[in-house]
Length: 104
Image (tube, rainbow, N blue to C red; front, side, top):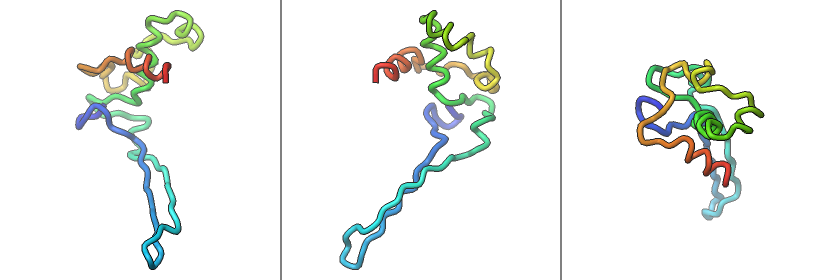
């Protein structure tokens, strides 16, 4: 979550396609890169970090074995997740999203 939207990505891809003189593709390349490196370890006010962390924490609230195995407490106990003070997003169901990830 950023102040702009609820699903802001910190990664990007540059896709390069080269064509020959008759218009046929003869080379392509995909480069993955990190956007806004500072946001990986720091969030501005009203922003969240990576969605999966909050989803995992929400899923572990109801799953004692998972919570115990990973030694999880709460989002508030992790500096990486609570720096901005935003733990949940209105209208986003982190636990349900975590279940979708597990079932994928």
